Length: 478
Image (cartoon, rainbow, N blue to C red; front, side):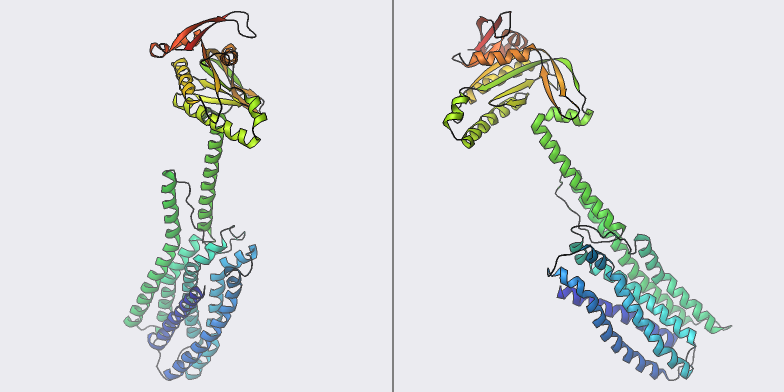
């Protein structure tokens, strides 16, 4: 903070010195007046320069004090502090302008007393010097205070935008490089009367316009280009799916609104990604993608699909014999295996029902080999669920026409499947708990599978499942 304040003060002094040098050279050597008693102006210039530097430093330090207090963490920042810091370049320019106007009370009487220049010449020249100094002051202060602005704008931008925007900064750069030198040419021409203009005076004014204009234009252009480049770089990162980027906000004008708007946009994208990820975990990636692309509509459609139902055996005894936290951990480990195996075989876990899970194949994305995938998943699960944290499971597989879609109301709904094949898979799971292999499939599902998958299964007779009048032919793993 001390280094920043010291650099800030040094730049303000240099801006005033530059303006003072221009005024002194213009009055002393450019305007075509007799150079009598030039020493009086020199003495007055040195004296007033010392006075203005001392007073300017004291007033500027006092004006900087509120910024220093919260920047050093002595107190929390408020909305009033944000407005104060964003207007500080204008405030500093006002301090410099007041000191320059005070110089008129010194130099106008001196030049009038000795007849060096007219009152208007001196007043206009000092005013041009003040405008040059204040313009440079604002552009330099705005750039040097960016670290302070960035700290102040972390929470929010100031509600008031009473600071020069993009157009004002460009106009300011034009005034420093073109407007003020042209005004000097007009003064030079008016002072000459009918005589030809001084070549030296024109060269001096052109040089001042070239140097100050180039400097002002570079600073003004960088005040616009730097934040735009930071936003452009951040956009490239977003295009590369990197949403951890954040653009520093250090401008109180439209530029700051652009920076802040970009950060809000990226935060919205991060939130959308989190919600999409959470949505996908809740309903399945394919269901989530379909909902995001097509929207959500209640109702369903009849499709061909395969279902796999997996249920933990002895879960009631497990809940009585183990602490709740241990039961939950065991079930999570169990279902992690289920989700991984089902994902690998092209299905998704539609819902968890306590200690059971319903897995779907062929919906919401249709696939011709849905039954094959479901039977393959059953085989994988048989091998991988033999003993997961002391848990074992029964598995039932069925296939057939079902109605798949969003069931519920517009306020609360879920994607699910309804049909005889779903009930059949649940009943097969109950029956599988009594079988040695713990895995059963319907002959209908087996008939829909390819030959390579069917060789792993064998006929296991017929049975009338609970709630059904017709017998169901079974298939078991070899």
